[in-house]
Image (cartoon, rainbow, N blue to C red; front, side, top):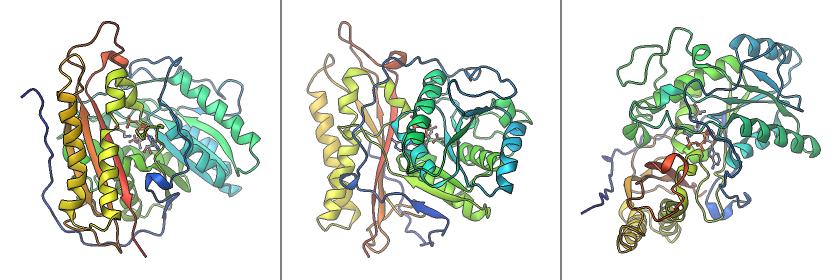
Length: 405
Ligand SMILES: Nc1ncnc2c1ncn2[C@@H]1O[C@H](COP(=O)(O)OP(=O)(O)OP(=O)(O)O)[C@@H](O)[C@H]1O
Ligand SMILES: CC(C)(CO)[C@@H](O)C(=O)[O-]
Ligand code: BAL
């Protein structure tokens, strides 16, 4: 058998319910069909992409650097952010932070729009944090598109200025170096690296944390640094990375950070694929098949809405979509098929991410999954394989099953 198709189901632990922190807010509570996000395509045509060498950061700074034809400050050091931030503490202007790793797409921009609606100043951070990539992961090829990102922010800032409904605009972009973010030296990407880390467990150990053992330690650590540097009143994260939002909310609660965490809905392409910086690696053959995960999650959501609450029925609906799609692909032969492996499909508690045997409608649940889209085996003449020759691409997605009052 050429294809490994595993549905890994994590050990089941029933959750201990914990209350949502008051400092947490969802901009929209999900199901895709209720979303009003515009249909967006993931094309990156015309954007210059460079490899994410850790030196692949924007050019070095001058005293009051701004993005071209804009008032957006470019801040590169902790000290420059502190200097920029100080007057806003005194004038009581609300500052929001949108953390990103660059390669900006409409998903990121939707978070910036949300932040500008209800805050006086929006700071966007662009930093590819090496600590959240495992040693064997795609740090070296992670897309870095600084010029396109800068242009997207300038264009969005103009849009925000023209639209009279915003409290604020994009005031600054924070683009630190790794030396700036890890002043004591970068601790390394290994699981047993020594250094100053923030670990949020056990929620950071399941699902994504199981597949990427250093991921949430890296995310929590860099977010704690970003929060301490920018000192935002509000931070904006995308539901696309749902477990990340749960980890960040937990960190904010447990470390008593005076910050409100706002979660924006997942922006999708017209066919349902969640926008992701990594989609550029898919290429023309894998791109349409990459919707399989979302289609599987939608089938599970439908089973739930049709009345099923138990794990077997709900996730069974997702599994059937995955298996049928894989069988269809395998029938196409090497020249036509797309191979994928399922990393996990999960039905989990919304606060702990622990697997559920059944959904309590009063609490709801989170359907999530990860698939690995394997490289094309036998490319056709002239076939567009995607950025960097179309390597393995790991995609994640989720649907929230909201509590029923
Ligand atoms: N499609 C999307 N809709 C809404 N928010 C998103 C979307 N994609 C990413 N975000 C959010 O943008 C923020 C920055 O994410 P990031 O820079 O890692 O982009 P990404 O597209 O998730 O990249 P990756 O390919 O690494 O997953 C995160 O809070 C993330 O959840
Ligand atoms: C939150 C984040 C910017 C931390 O590096 C990253 O995990 C991301 O882009 O989702
Ligand atoms: N959006 C999550 C960042 C990562 O996969 O590293």
